[in-house]
Image 1 (cartoon, rainbow, N blue to C red):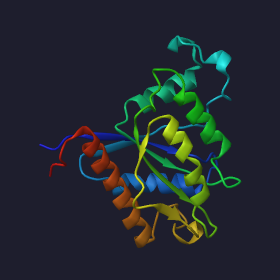
Image 2 (image 1 turned 45 degrees about the horizontal axis):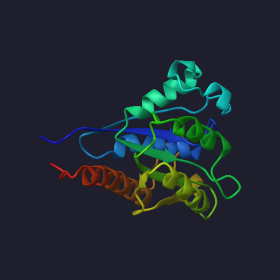
Image 3 (image 1 turned 90 degrees about the vertical axis):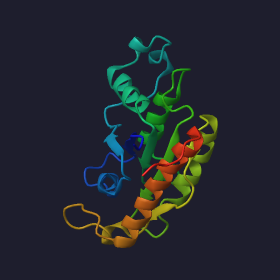
Image 4 (image 1 turned 60 degrees about the vertical axis):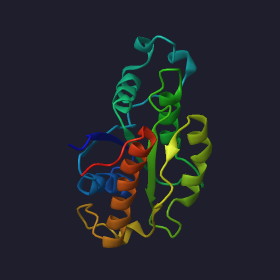
Length: 193
C-alpha cells in the first residue's frame, strides 16, 4: 500500500485574478497519486512584529497560528509566486517570516516545490533565485528540476482561470512528482505504486 502524502500550497499573490493563484489551483488536478493538498492563505497575516511572536504559541495572532498549523501538517510545500522587483513579494516574505521563527517553526527541514507565473518573458526566475538563502537558513530542501517558470501566463489560462497550456501542465505535473519523490528519498523510502 502506498504511503499518503499531504502538500500545502501557498500563493504569493494577493491579487484577485492572480496568474499564480490560478497556477496553484491547477496543481490540484496534477497531483501525483496518493497526494492531497490544501491551500494556506497569507492574506490575513499581520505585518511581522517580533513583539507579537512570543515563545508561547498561544500569544501569536490567530491568523498566524492558523497559518502555522496548516504548514505543520505538510509533508511538502508548494509555493507559487509572482516576482516583484526581481525578488520575493513582500506579503509572501512576511508569511515566511511568521512561519520561520522559533524552534517550533513549521518550515524547518521541509521539502518545497517552487514555481511562478508572469505575463512577461522571464517566468519569475529572479524571485526563485531569491528564495535560495531563505531555504538555506531553514534547511529546506527544494526541487530544482524541473523548474516551473511560466512566462506569457496570459496565453496559458482560459477566461475561467483554467490552465490550458499542455506543456505547462506537463512540467507542473513533473515538478509535483519530483516533490513526492524527494520526500520519499529523504525519508529513505521507495515510492510505491
